[in-house]
Image (cartoon, rainbow, N blue to C red; front, side):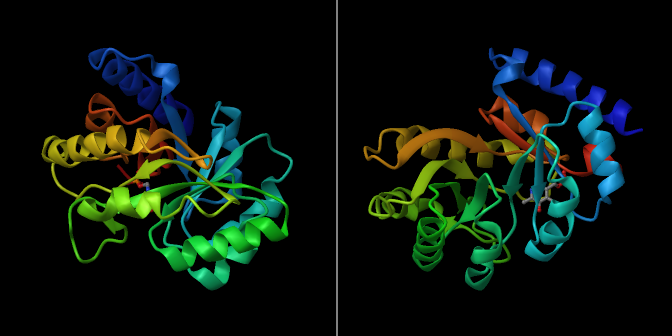
Length: 226
Ligand SMILES: *Cc1c(COP(=O)(O)O)cnc(C)c1O
C-alpha cells in the first residue's frame, strides 16, 4: 500500500513539475509521520523516502531513537513551544515553524550550546485564519530581517499551510507565498540562504508545486487516509 501510494505521489510530482516547467528532482518530498508507527515509517524508507517530518516533540522523541540508524533527514513541521526546543535541536535538520522572536532567541541559544547552526523556515499565516500559527503576511519581510543577528540560525525559506478547501482554491494562497519568497530571496545577510518554499500537503500538493513549492509535506497521501 505504502509502495503504491509513493509511486502515485511521484507520478503527480512529475506531472505537476512538468506543468510548471521544473525538474521533479528539485522538489523535496517529506513524509509526515505523525501517528504513523515506526514499522510503517521503515517501510516508507525502504521505498525510497529519505526525509521524515514530525509535528509533536513528544512523538518525535519516542521515534527518533528507533530510527537513528536510518539515513534520513528530520523535519519538525509543527508548532514548537520554547521550552521544548532543547529536546530537538540536536537532531532536527530543518525546523519549519519559526514565527516569533522569542522562539528564535531560544533556538539560537540552544543551537549555540550544542555547537550547531540550526537551519529553519519561517512559517507564514498566509490565510490570516486565527486558528493558524505563523507571522502575518505583511510582517514577514521585516520579521525575516530581524533574524539577521542570530548567528546560530540559518534562514532557509518559508513555510505555510493553506486552508483546507478544494485544491484549486488554495492556488491564490500559494501564489502569495511565491511572491513573498521572491522578496525574501533578496534579503542580504550571512545567515540567509533562502531557497526553500515548503508548501503543499496531501490535499493540495499538486497545486502547490505548480505554484512554485519545492518542498512538500505529505502524510495521508503516503500512509493512507486519503
Ligand atoms: C500533518 C501535517 C502535514 C501532512 O498532512 P496530510 O494532509 O496528511 O498530508 C503537513 N504539514 C504539517 C504541518 C502537518 O501538521
